[in-house]
Length: 149
Image (cartoon, rainbow, N blue to C red; front, side):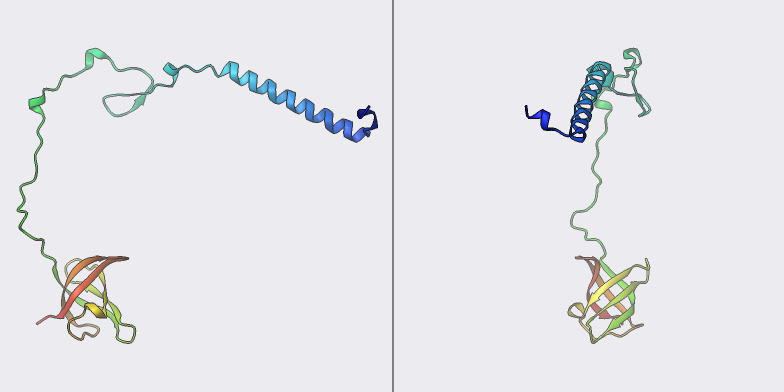
């Protein structure tokens, strides 16, 4: 009795929703039937050149590697030898009032940030300085900055 009170527009909306639901169910069943992939269809192989293929490798082309033929070596470096961290550079920019600046390395041309707390002697722009490097929060930082003699 509740449906007899429906307007024509409400009936059309209800019919459209039911039709849409049935079409969706048909599409789902059709895709389920056509999408019968097996695990073997999904396997991919890597050939000898590193390319991905769908054909399995030829067992006759398999090469055996002897365990003794594998060479593993560690570089022979002296653990007591420290890398040369002392560098020479030119003060490219330094602001005394803000307390920071930049030093350009003479060898690599790389710029290093320098803070006033890491300066041991007063410096100005275009001064030749000697410094050590550290990793700072935003990149390489110059520490223990001194004027070059």
